[in-house]
Amino acid sequence: MKIHSLQADLCKALAHPVRLEVLELLAKREHTVEELTKLTGTGQSNLSQHLAALRQQKLVVPHREGVNVYYGLSNPKIADACSLIRKLLVDLFEDERRVLRKIEV
Image 1 (cartoon, one colour):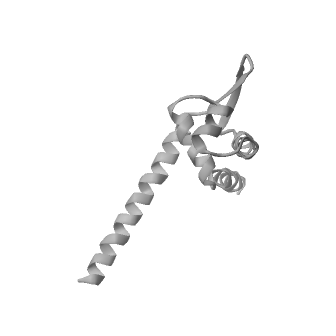
Image 2: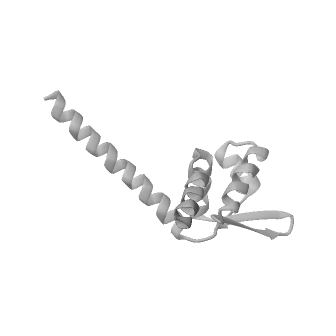
């Protein structure tokens, strides 16, 4: 039961479009908070809250270089998991379209 609770908490952290966008960006390379703010179009305060939620679930890790704080994925499997979910969505929509086509005929 504990693993399901942990999994639910992790899924809650993933359940926001900005967080998913941040993870997608970080899958490509590390970014500073300033870069992520510009790339997502999200205010710095709001972005910091999203990063805190991702840090809490250990999905991202920060490291400091001089005055900049860079964020990266804590594990490359995070990018794989997000990609798999997107592929699942595509499959689900394809199945739905096939059903609708059969109904229309």
